[in-house]
Image (cartoon, rainbow, N blue to C red; front, side, top):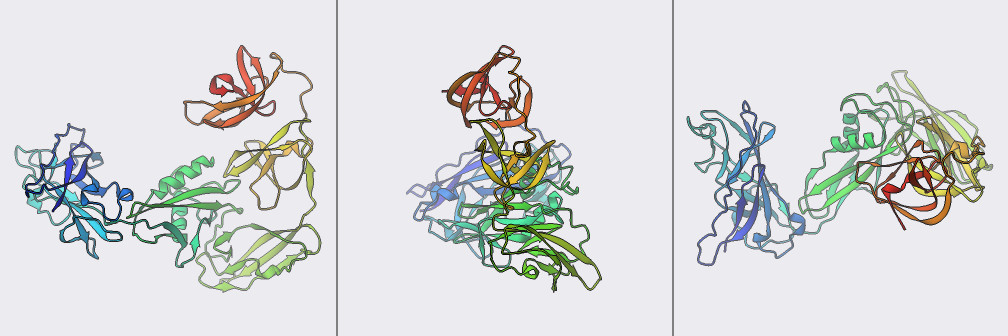
Length: 521
């Protein structure tokens, strides 16, 4: 019993559903739906064709081949082309080269490679008496078959244009990533911003660092990593002039999600942390320091337990240049680390290559509990927001620290004119606005000029139909920089009327949200 694919022709694509031949041997009729005229590039003569299986993840061992769905699509230049098929398409087992072999398949089997082949494909809506080129077709298509007739607007009416899908397999193999060139599975991975400080540079660095794998299937494609990197940069508040332009160094790390798609319909996503360690690397022929596979530029932060053994010369590895052709000896220029005493110390390391070029880095070593603490100073009974930093963008974590809490403090970053201090540990991505730690915050001594707030208790869920989120205001009705996302819920402490409108306070006096954008309960 043969299995066949029915086509639904559309302007952009034709949906193909595999349908069985009836037991009499008479094939079920192909469905050829006329397509509407679509705009095209009148001067374009380059056609392309693709056929893709759309439901691999839902297919199981033992399923009928009629369960396979596929999509046929065509392009004319950069525009969608009118494409359809007037006969069936078929599922075959695939050989080592990804080509169909043997008879059509009736029943799908786990971990067996398959392809779908579509025949009698027709392009419509073309210019008469015009020679076209075609990419993506299966098999050879003669040049004279790609020229429209004097009064014709179609190609393929002789039945000589075919398409073939990529190889797919049936199975529940799991996708994952490994460190490039190894079998070491990774659940996240760092790449360095310095030396890769452009969209294209980051894309290349990520692709060189890790490789997608699957237990039972082959890699089909990855998401548009260039688009993913660009989106991550913009989300981190980093201006992206072009894919090749050098990017300004952000204040802190940010994350790019690397997504791989496999032939059995599964996907794998790897969060890649783009590490910002300081100034750009600049000279690629100078010695380069690394910690594991992350390049260190300028400085590196680390922590050790009190009384732990510490060898300054083995903290980082030095290579002759950024290509890591061979290792160099590391010189400890200075080292004031005292492993027996809590504190934050510095080590200066140096390496010189045969070209006579020298690179220095500073290692900031936190031993035990350094004892550098500060007390949160806000208002009795109130709390301050705790933030993370994504590139140049502060992100509210949803957590707060109460007034009077003692925290360990480390370095600071200034973003959009606001200073943030790292708390917890030297390597944490946890920050509190510096004004609440250094005593510079002064609570208002006068009530708001608008009506006084009314103490209430409840929860406000953000309901906002626009893009992004809702910007908060202070108690005087002045917009602040903080934005809360749609769908998030917040504890409400008070409400008040400002300029005739109702607002809810979801934190301090700089965190009022318009009542029109929340559901209060």
